[in-house]
Image 1 (cartoon, rainbow, N blue to C red):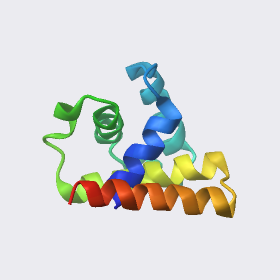
Image 2: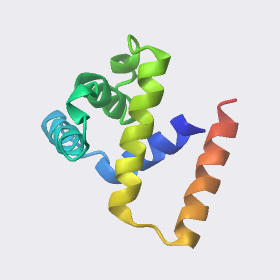
Image 3: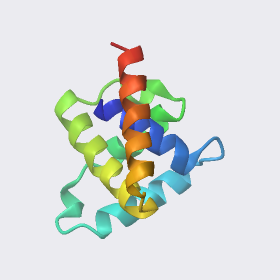
Length: 104
């Protein structure tokens, strides 16, 4: 479920025009705005975002615990930035549930 929500949010935020530099800038800004963010794995977060955008090989060597923590951090930052209404959040969760069910 988290992976599906992460992929949906990443694709909505970055889209097909995303660049590695733009992704790196987003990750750096997100880490800088979080107390203790310098301890978060920047390269892994960038790799997971790029994997969700179509470069799955970049996530191949990321351990599940690092991936989950990174996905949760990025997902939280993305959702905070868009300020969804309750109805929009409900629709987002429903889409994530449907996407997750397709891959189970």
